[in-house]
Length: 300
Ligand SMILES: Cc1cc2nc3c(=O)[nH]c(=O)nc-3n(C[C@H](O)[C@H](O)[C@H](O)COP(=O)(O)OP(=O)(O)OC[C@H]3O[C@@H](n4cnc5c(N)ncnc54)[C@H](O)[C@@H]3O)c2cc1C
Image (cartoon, rainbow, N blue to C red; front, side, top):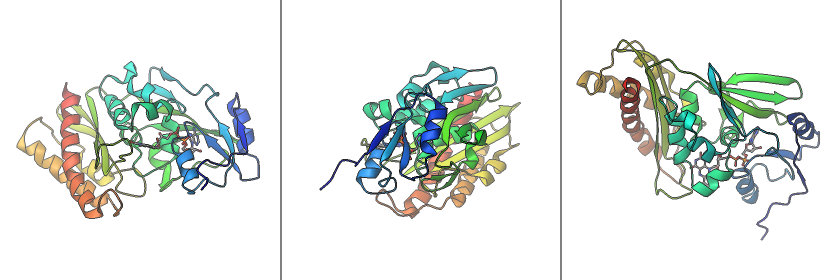
């Protein structure tokens, strides 16, 4: 039995242009590799990607960085998950949700290889890092043979393991705009066995921005309960302009209603981790906790 991928060529380009040139070759056998923690197991199991035997490694393109500008945080797509987890720039609210998701991702060893870009481009329904980035309104920068373009993360996923990226395009940077003052966010993940390969049964993130006690913006994202991570926009709209006061019955009732609306926007399936019915029941439980944490953080 073959258990190693049949790799014919391995390229390590030094520039994004060179990498795009390699990916643009018309033979359909070339694929980009970042950390390889999705791509290599997928090849071994014979799923998508197994026919691609020319790998283009992007680790030499200088895409491993976290920078701050006046308006945004810029993260290179090849930044590994441990670097995100330990970054001091995300230690303040609401960006701490990124650290929470990074620490919930697999194990220390795997996180040293797994990249943020890989987590997004793999477009798994349970991709942990997608959730805080969805609620923080992240924008993706992509480069391809026709130049550079940007897209909101919210419009990036189109199906399980499917995004708007063309095969010759590279995700180069993730931009997170600075949120208004008094914003709080949270990431939460329900797993089955708490092992290294324990993907989420349900994962979620929320972000609330408060002004004078009123919710001026609400973001609610769900994973593992639809074809890809998504924002529950009806629940978000319900929360906006509501008066929110920490630890009150009225606010708890609002969170309960928003969480119920979000559950209706989900379309979970039965799989080896959980049934669709269990997932549907757990969505409101997780979201009420997460919204409570986000509110608490927005006020602190
Ligand atoms: C044991 C185990 C445990 C795991 N646990 C978790 C977990 O808890 N949570 C979780 O979310 N995931 C988990 N994963 C999945 C995986 O580790 C992550 O999705 C990881 O972040 C992928 O990053 P990577 O750099 O390894 O991607 P790769 O495997 O290198 O690439 C994945 C896909 O994205 C494409 N790609 C990568 N980077 C780019 C780019 N910059 N531009 C365009 N395309 C790109 C590749 O061509 C490939 O199709 C786990 C995987 C394993 C094997």
